[in-house]
Amino acid sequence: MNERVFNQNIEKLRSEERRERLEVKRVVDLSLDHEPVSFVLDIGTGSGLFAEEFANRGFRVFGVDPNPEMIEAAKQFVPEARFYNAQAENLPFNDSSFDVVFFGLVLHEVDDYLKALKEASRVTRKEAAILEWEYAAQEFGPPLEHRLKKEFIEELALKAGFKNVEVHKLKNLVLYKLLK
Image (cartoon, helix red, strand yellow):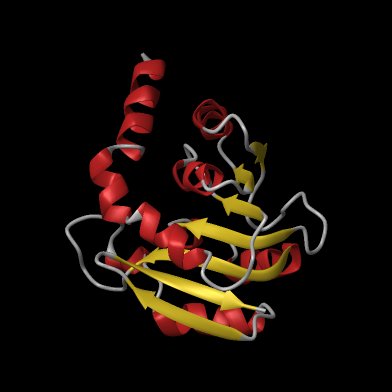
Protein backbone atom coordinates (compact mmCIF):
# COMPACT_ATOMS: atom_id res chain seq x y z
CA MET A 1 0.00 0.00 0.00
CA ASN A 2 2.73 2.51 0.90
CA GLU A 3 4.49 1.60 -2.32
CA ARG A 4 1.44 2.62 -4.36
CA VAL A 5 1.15 5.97 -2.62
CA PHE A 6 4.86 6.54 -3.10
CA ASN A 7 4.70 5.68 -6.81
CA GLN A 8 1.71 7.95 -7.33
CA ASN A 9 3.56 10.80 -5.63
CA ILE A 10 6.59 10.25 -7.83
CA GLU A 11 4.40 10.18 -10.92
CA LYS A 12 2.77 13.45 -9.84
CA LEU A 13 6.17 15.05 -9.18
CA ARG A 14 7.26 14.09 -12.69
CA SER A 15 4.01 14.74 -14.58
CA GLU A 16 4.05 16.70 -17.83
CA GLU A 17 1.72 19.28 -16.26
CA ARG A 18 4.19 19.87 -13.43
CA ARG A 19 7.16 20.04 -15.84
CA GLU A 20 5.33 22.77 -17.76
CA ARG A 21 4.30 24.67 -14.63
CA LEU A 22 7.89 24.55 -13.35
CA GLU A 23 9.27 25.52 -16.80
CA VAL A 24 12.04 22.95 -16.31
CA LYS A 25 13.90 23.58 -19.59
CA ARG A 26 13.73 27.39 -19.25
CA VAL A 27 14.86 27.26 -15.61
CA VAL A 28 17.86 25.11 -16.54
CA ASP A 29 18.67 27.46 -19.45
CA LEU A 30 18.61 30.47 -17.12
CA SER A 31 20.66 28.62 -14.49
CA LEU A 32 23.43 28.02 -17.02
CA ASP A 33 23.57 31.32 -18.91
CA HIS A 34 26.69 32.88 -17.34
CA GLU A 35 29.73 30.64 -17.24
CA PRO A 36 30.95 27.39 -18.69
CA VAL A 37 29.53 24.70 -16.45
CA SER A 38 30.69 21.13 -15.81
CA PHE A 39 29.51 20.17 -12.30
CA VAL A 40 26.00 20.79 -10.95
CA LEU A 41 24.57 20.09 -7.50
CA ASP A 42 20.78 19.72 -7.19
CA ILE A 43 19.79 20.38 -3.57
CA GLY A 44 16.47 18.82 -2.57
CA THR A 45 16.54 16.79 -5.76
CA GLY A 46 13.33 14.89 -5.02
CA SER A 47 12.71 12.48 -7.89
CA GLY A 48 15.50 14.11 -9.90
CA LEU A 49 13.34 16.18 -12.26
CA PHE A 50 15.85 19.03 -12.59
CA ALA A 51 18.86 16.72 -12.15
CA GLU A 52 17.64 14.80 -15.18
CA GLU A 53 17.47 17.96 -17.32
CA PHE A 54 20.99 19.01 -16.23
CA ALA A 55 22.28 15.48 -16.99
CA ASN A 56 20.59 15.44 -20.39
CA ARG A 57 22.74 18.43 -21.29
CA GLY A 58 25.93 16.56 -20.53
CA PHE A 59 26.82 17.93 -17.08
CA ARG A 60 28.16 15.87 -14.19
CA VAL A 61 25.23 15.98 -11.79
CA PHE A 62 25.11 15.34 -8.07
CA GLY A 63 21.99 15.56 -5.95
CA VAL A 64 21.07 15.58 -2.28
CA ASP A 65 17.77 15.03 -0.54
CA PRO A 66 16.88 14.31 3.10
CA ASN A 67 14.34 11.66 2.05
CA PRO A 68 15.97 8.27 1.26
CA GLU A 69 12.94 7.23 -0.83
CA MET A 70 13.44 10.25 -3.08
CA ILE A 71 17.12 9.41 -3.47
CA GLU A 72 16.19 5.91 -4.66
CA ALA A 73 13.64 7.34 -7.12
CA ALA A 74 16.15 9.88 -8.46
CA LYS A 75 18.70 7.10 -9.03
CA GLN A 76 16.16 5.25 -11.18
CA PHE A 77 15.38 8.31 -13.32
CA VAL A 78 18.93 9.67 -13.55
CA PRO A 79 21.28 6.68 -13.20
CA GLU A 80 24.29 8.64 -14.49
CA ALA A 81 24.07 11.13 -11.58
CA ARG A 82 25.33 10.60 -8.04
CA PHE A 83 22.83 11.09 -5.21
CA TYR A 84 23.33 11.41 -1.47
CA ASN A 85 21.06 11.48 1.53
CA ALA A 86 21.81 14.89 3.04
CA GLN A 87 20.27 18.18 4.08
CA ALA A 88 20.89 21.59 2.49
CA GLU A 89 22.39 22.85 5.76
CA ASN A 90 25.08 20.16 5.87
CA LEU A 91 26.38 19.26 2.41
CA PRO A 92 28.85 16.35 2.17
CA PHE A 93 31.12 18.03 -0.39
CA ASN A 94 34.41 19.91 -0.41
CA ASP A 95 34.62 23.66 -0.87
CA SER A 96 34.23 24.88 -4.47
CA SER A 97 33.17 21.47 -5.79
CA PHE A 98 30.46 22.73 -8.19
CA ASP A 99 29.95 25.36 -10.85
CA VAL A 100 26.22 25.68 -10.16
CA VAL A 101 24.25 24.78 -7.04
CA PHE A 102 20.51 24.53 -7.70
CA PHE A 103 17.57 24.67 -5.27
CA GLY A 104 14.32 23.61 -6.98
CA LEU A 105 11.41 24.75 -4.79
CA VAL A 106 13.14 23.69 -1.59
CA LEU A 107 14.60 26.79 0.08
CA HIS A 108 11.25 27.59 1.72
CA GLU A 109 11.33 24.10 3.30
CA VAL A 110 14.78 24.13 4.94
CA ASP A 111 15.18 24.52 8.71
CA ASP A 112 17.85 27.24 8.52
CA TYR A 113 17.76 29.45 5.41
CA LEU A 114 21.04 31.25 6.08
CA LYS A 115 22.96 28.06 6.88
CA ALA A 116 21.64 26.43 3.69
CA LEU A 117 22.78 29.40 1.58
CA LYS A 118 26.16 29.54 3.33
CA GLU A 119 26.63 25.86 2.48
CA ALA A 120 25.66 26.56 -1.14
CA SER A 121 28.16 29.43 -1.24
CA ARG A 122 30.84 27.17 0.24
CA VAL A 123 30.45 24.37 -2.31
CA THR A 124 29.96 26.48 -5.44
CA ARG A 125 32.72 28.09 -7.46
CA LYS A 126 30.42 30.38 -9.44
CA GLU A 127 26.76 30.60 -8.54
CA ALA A 128 23.63 29.24 -6.97
CA ALA A 129 20.20 29.25 -8.59
CA ILE A 130 17.08 29.23 -6.44
CA LEU A 131 13.70 28.44 -7.94
CA GLU A 132 10.94 29.52 -5.57
CA TRP A 133 7.24 30.26 -5.50
CA GLU A 134 6.29 33.85 -6.11
CA TYR A 135 5.30 35.65 -2.91
CA ALA A 136 1.64 35.81 -3.91
CA ALA A 137 -1.50 33.79 -3.27
CA GLN A 138 -1.83 31.20 -6.03
CA GLU A 139 -4.16 28.27 -6.51
CA PHE A 140 -1.19 25.87 -6.42
CA GLY A 141 1.91 25.56 -4.30
CA PRO A 142 2.33 26.27 -0.59
CA PRO A 143 0.25 28.79 1.35
CA LEU A 144 1.47 32.41 1.35
CA GLU A 145 2.95 32.15 4.85
CA HIS A 146 5.37 29.45 3.61
CA ARG A 147 6.59 31.52 0.67
CA LEU A 148 9.69 33.72 0.77
CA LYS A 149 9.77 37.39 -0.14
CA LYS A 150 12.23 38.56 -2.79
CA GLU A 151 13.87 40.99 -0.38
CA PHE A 152 14.38 38.23 2.18
CA ILE A 153 16.13 35.97 -0.34
CA GLU A 154 18.31 38.84 -1.57
CA GLU A 155 19.32 39.73 2.01
CA LEU A 156 20.13 36.09 2.83
CA ALA A 157 22.21 35.74 -0.33
CA LEU A 158 24.40 38.70 0.58
CA LYS A 159 24.82 37.46 4.16
CA ALA A 160 25.81 34.04 2.80
CA GLY A 161 28.66 35.48 0.75
CA PHE A 162 27.16 36.01 -2.69
CA LYS A 163 28.00 39.34 -4.37
CA ASN A 164 25.03 39.83 -6.68
CA VAL A 165 21.47 38.57 -7.09
CA GLU A 166 19.61 38.46 -10.40
CA VAL A 167 15.84 37.96 -10.31
CA HIS A 168 14.03 36.28 -13.21
CA LYS A 169 10.23 36.31 -13.03
CA LEU A 170 8.75 33.26 -14.74
CA LYS A 171 5.10 32.42 -15.48
CA ASN A 172 4.40 30.90 -12.06
CA LEU A 173 7.70 31.04 -10.21
CA VAL A 174 10.78 33.18 -9.62
CA LEU A 175 14.39 32.17 -10.32
CA TYR A 176 17.05 33.88 -8.23
CA LYS A 177 20.64 33.66 -9.48
CA LEU A 178 23.17 34.25 -6.72
CA LEU A 179 26.57 35.12 -8.16
CA LYS A 180 29.89 34.89 -6.33
